[in-house]
Amino acid sequence: MVTLSINNVKYNLALKGNETLLEVLRDHLGLTGTKAACDESECGACTVIINGKAVLSCITLAADVEGDEITTIEGLADKEELHPVQKAFIDTGAVQCGFCIPGMIMSSKALLDKNREPAQEEIEQALDGNLCRCGGYLKIFEAVRQAGKRIKDAKPN
Image (cartoon, rainbow, N blue to C red):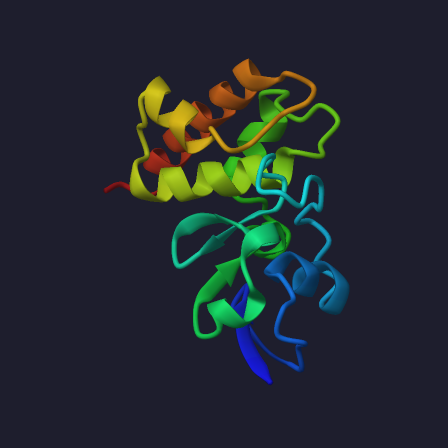
C-alpha cells in the first residue's frame, strides 16, 4: 500500500511497485489531464508539480513520491475559477491542439511560483523539456509573461 497526496486528496493505493506516477494518475485515479505521449522523458506532456518542482511523471515511480505533495493540471483550478496560468494560456491563444498544454502549464506554474517576473531566458529554460508539436512557442512564452503579471497583481510579494 502506498499513500499519495494528489491535489490535496490522500489516496491509499495497492501498487505493483514498478508503476509510474503517470500510470497511477491516469489508470488508477482517472486523472487524464496529465498526458501520456513519449514515455521516454522527452516531451514534457506528463509534467506535474511535486513539492513545488516540475517533474516528469512518466519516469517517476509512484512509490517514490509517497508523502510528497503532488499537483496535477486538475488541481490548479479553484472550483469553477481557472488558475491565472490557465487563463493566460487561453487568453493569449497559446492553446492550439492542446496536447502539450497541461505539461506547459504545470512547468509554467512551477516557474512562476518562484519568480513572477521571469526573463525570457528563464521562461525558455523552464519550458525546455516541454515540446509543442504545433510550434506555438511564441504564444506560450507570452502566456507565461501574462500569467506572471496577473499573479503579481493579484498577490503582491
